[in-house]
Length: 389
Ligand SMILES: C[S@@+](CC[C@H](N)C(=O)[O-])C[C@H]1O[C@@H](n2cnc3c(N)ncnc32)[C@H](O)[C@@H]1O
Image (cartoon, rainbow, N blue to C red; front, side, top):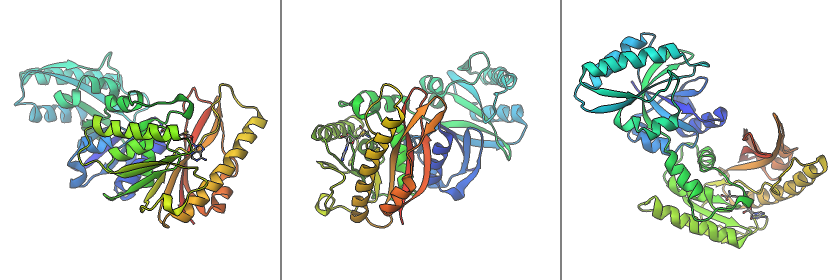
């Protein structure tokens, strides 16, 4: 069986788009409430934790070992076949995916029956689930269930019920290290989450080849260049503010050391206004432009209509000019993934007005847009994918 389920992160549509870009649309078997099932080839399954680490929008990867409704019997058979030669105490969990209200009776039944089977095999098991509820992925990660024990998943798909075990899980420590412990942070320039930077890079380079060069013309503290390096790509970052250029440089140096990147890809930074780029600034063959862009002034309260208009007007000018510049300096097939400012008030979002016309004027068309918002934020990001007309 070569089916794998990918548990999607918070913004499901965006997380699925990343998977389609990386794994290929033709390999999608089905998309459910909170998972997407893909058929993977041999190369893709060689290093599943590596694949997981490269996907900002996937919470965990589950290897499907059976399909159908004989859940209890299938899990019993799986445990008997796979745990007979193992000794010691193992952490164990059961997760139900793609079911609106996970069936707690089933979780409890599976936990009790599995404990009994494991005991008969001479193994002590420790449930990670509490009160027959699904366990948070972070708890599964912290209890090292994937390495030391087993997390059994029942996935209620549209076409079938799938049964599988978690084979890779989001490394929350590595994300938090990059996010909070990098040497340079600056709350004023915004805090692009490393996971979102990864998603944006993957969207910009569908079916990426080994040799890719990413350019971020608004690099700030360097989250996109850092994630680009980790994914194995050469990166270039520039910013109008020389302090930011230094920050990116220092953060990238730190990343290479801290994450012990062997044969690290190359990176360079320079100071520049993205509206006035020259050919000599970018002698390399750029294969993707990934940037958060400038989002406008930081806000503490919701902007008035006039303030919104002013920000949109200023940003329209900036976007038109930098897009025109990179249009002349990059080959035809270079995609841009950038963020547009939007304002969020409770559940409604005011999006950037007339961006389609602006992008067309600069020589680009919009391939797709995905909103990325958080509950407590006023300024939110619309992720937009642009290709040359
Ligand atoms: C939202 S921040 C980017 C944050 C970045 N993603 C990070 O990881 O920290 C926007 C950046 O754009 C820069 N900027 C603003 N106007 C610019 C321009 N015209 N050209 C180049 N950079 C500009 C700012 O100095 C700021 O660092």
